Amino acid sequence: AGYMTLVNTGTEEVVLTGVESQSYASIDVHEMKTVNGLMEMRDIPELAIPANGQVQMLPGGMHLMLKGPRQHFTAGQTVQLTLNFGSAGQQVLTVMVAAR
Image (cartoon, rainbow, N blue to C red):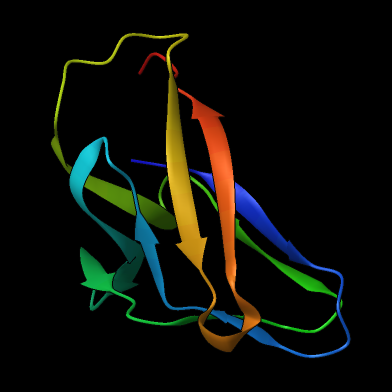
């Protein structure tokens, strides 16, 4: 799982439309919610970050689901992620792998 805070300092909403990495077969945005007393996970195909706002991805809530790792990762290694924001462009991040 991947956790981060997405911050939008602009005056218009931006929408995260996808995340890619050469280190994983696929990456999805998921959300954990309690529904009728049971914890469920659902896919979020587009994530809006409000103008001058932020969205937090935290354990037990919204997170990146990193699927199909292409190698074994250990704490301290880094991975590049490309966040796609549709017409707002892309942002490439280098994130550190943490121990569970």
